[in-house]
Length: 312
Image (cartoon, rainbow, N blue to C red):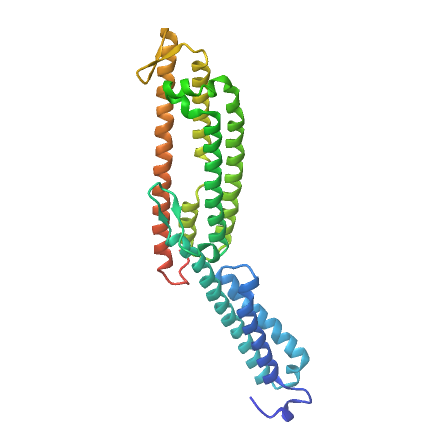
């Protein structure tokens, strides 16, 4: 290749065109990940090479067409290679950003009551961390609202004849449990929407498949909501218990419910068994959530310990 531009035609400046194209590719590699969505490495490499080809064509029409054949072919190879290199740089940046996001899930812990605890500043690590942090906060608010609604109804008094004697409010209006049932349904819809948004964000993250699966495991299945079924079963049993106690055939037998007729006593015993089964199911849901979060965390940790170019 000749560096003497006078021999390459009146406007044959291929070096300048090649350097300018390379600068554009480097700039795109540095700025693109800030504004664009992550893509798989093969797609990035193909796109980078194609961008290099486009820039070469622009340079060719502007000036390189006046250069000799060596410059034409050399600048083409350089820009296509630079495009692929820029794609690799962009991939690394996407991976750095996504792995910072995923690190929130690798560092997650569980409180004594099973509540997930994210590390400090997790919400600022990326979009998936932000969505999950918001979902956890929304779940806490929803649980508090549900508990407050039950307390306002007086559900706690249905467990003790002494408390019910002191405050018979609940059995005076058993239909008041229906708004709580509606509240549970509304909360479930919101919970499902949050999980779907999380699933979409996880799917679009530039992460190894194993890391995505681990995060999805922590976030929970967006297609099912076992908590709603459990809450509805509990509310059904509570409503029936309220109706039974509203007959006032019971009395305080040293802190236990006694009944003046066998049918109500049998119905009370059956409801007690149902409520215990629901409570056991609640415990099973909590245990499953703990196991799921712990297993997902370990899966994310393992995935993040591997090379950024390992996709599985």
